[in-house]
Amino acid sequence: MRLTSNDLTSNESGLSLEDLLDAVLTENDLCDRYADASPGEAIIYHIGLLARDRDKVASELAAERRAELELVARRVWAMAEAGLGHLLQRRVAPGCCAYLLVVRPRPLSARSAAGYAIAELLRREVA
Image (tube, rainbow, N blue to C red; front, side, top):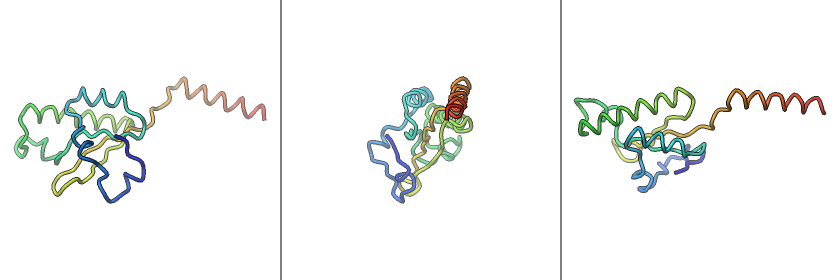
């Protein structure tokens, strides 16, 4: 699923039932989906109320599913802190949100960044 900037700022959730059913369920699925994603693509990693569903007392999820959700949530947070994506939530119904990781452009490696800097210097010298 791809969301444009206009989709992200609209008042409607912009999410179809098909999008919601395509949410990742495991940490491995999340990593696979991220590896195949293009910048700007949104990955739905949870539908519900994340804080409640991660809580051992308040959650209605099975223990195995709650544990997997905890792994997914921690991985998504680490990815966001590393600058690999933005975290968003979209309300899909009263008391229910879709939690998304929007993929950022991949950072250039230090070698590539140096190559671009050298090319820019050479371009300036020619002009």
